[in-house]
Length: 243
Image 1 (spheres, one colour):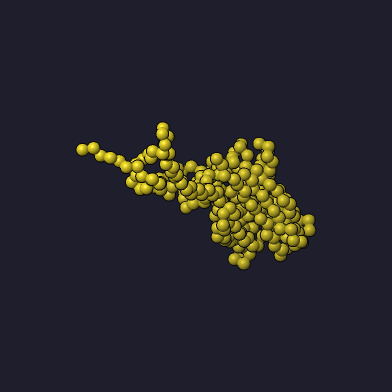
Image 2 (image 1 turned 90 degrees about the horizontal axis):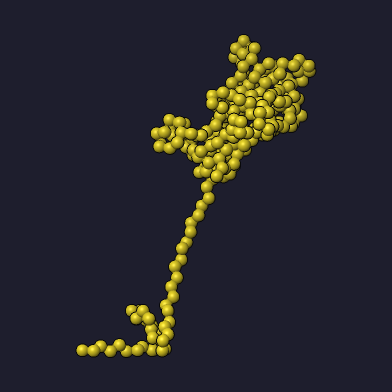
């Protein structure tokens, strides 16, 4: 029995033949489209500082009663929105001529992209009373290089080692390739090496350690001008993510 397939006028409906005869030797093709939606999110690079225990050394430390001892404290601010890092405040009281105060900091990358610390910027407190005290202080920034505290360079040129500088002036310290820059791997949980190993990822470049060292120079010329005064200088760590 022969089957006859009728020609249907009009558009081809659902279930119609794949090709519809429209004229001698010609065909009309169906069209189709596909949509692909992308979801793209950039990574983050964000520094976070954790304060260590500040310390003081000097010729009269321990000689006075409890009232005359240095008072050392630190506090850590919360992490703000990306890209800003947090803030750390140190409180050092009973500064005495000849004393050296050390403020330790550990820097982490709590984002998702690796990066490095490039520069450290010191800014003095420029109020009148603060400047009177700061002119008797020196400041230096040091970084832990393979277990040795090393002065961060005060010049971009390699080999120009940093030295204690006047605390009443602004300074920029550079991490150059003679012992840095200090690379940081993403470490949002701020793991130490043991914790990182237990979590199953690399224990390299989890953090970097710095310290800021202030010395009250034992200069007796008009030193009484600084008695009872206070200052609040700042130190800023600047970094960038690396490819």
